[in-house]
Length: 138
Image 1 (cartoon, rainbow, N blue to C red):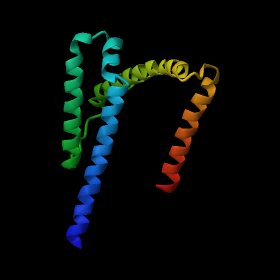
Image 2 (spheres, rainbow, N blue to C red):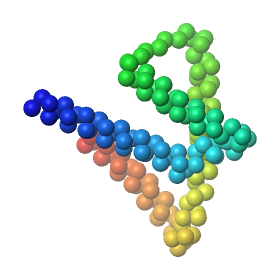
Image 3 (cartoon, helix red, strand yellow):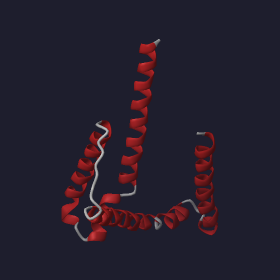
Image 4 (spheres, one colour):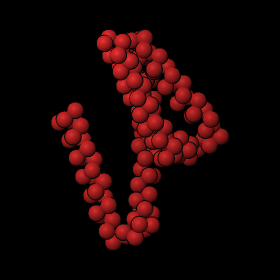
């Protein structure tokens, strides 16, 4: 029974990793996050560097997580890390705000121009209900 339990854990772990990885890749590709970041920062020629940095960051973070690596920085050395993290979050937020322009196009194609508020409310309530289910049940 111990072998069966271990195999089940391996299967669940791999399935979870595939699900999270697929969601992350879908997020990046469907929303065109990297190309939008290059447009915002006016660095279209460096789009490959963005991709390489994303892959390298993912690999290093996975390796550090598997090795249970813990780093400690002095308060002064955390300033550049915080600035770079803030720049990343700000650029990501700026790229995501451009995605909002998709909603009017979607409502036009679905023939829901006069009912765009219902489309927005369906998205909001879906997110709220999904979050509540996640928090309460799981």
